[in-house]
Image (cartoon, rainbow, N blue to C red; front, side, top):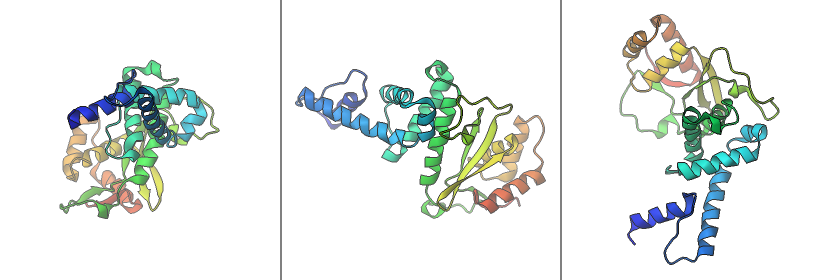
Length: 241
């Protein structure tokens, strides 16, 4: 058996709903290996979503984790990134098959809790090779999120389900020291930051915003907002010149 075939056989054993088999290994041992792998992944994801588990129950969460492992097995290089893959799967499923969730706020809550882990584990700026002296640079931990429910305010003792917001909230999360900071943003500034994550040209990003927004984003206002984010630590560099 070639190495690629062996790797596929191991994935089939661990992640197919009807477990595959490994040649030359007896069935009891294969079942033990599958169980150990899946239990490890369950534990890894569970510990990142304590609020969701408390509000909707482990049975509901475990059913979603099982579905994710069966339908979209993890491909992340690092074990710590597996929860992020689960959150992305949940968001995709919330759009394609919303009936799988007890409430539309649940995929958002899963994303929010796992987002915090992603922010806290992100590299520091000096750990990333940055050969360009670009005028606008987001901190490597900076993450944009938009939610239709106030999931960022939920705790283990909150009432469930949450009421939808009148207007979706845009949040920028980033790390300062060893803690996560969260700043609410207007939709216009959130869009500008999303564009700046792909291009560090401030004026070019403003022009793209003007093409997609009903009213143009004032340059002076936008610059003042980004200067404030730079002061807070969400941007490692900012210059509007």
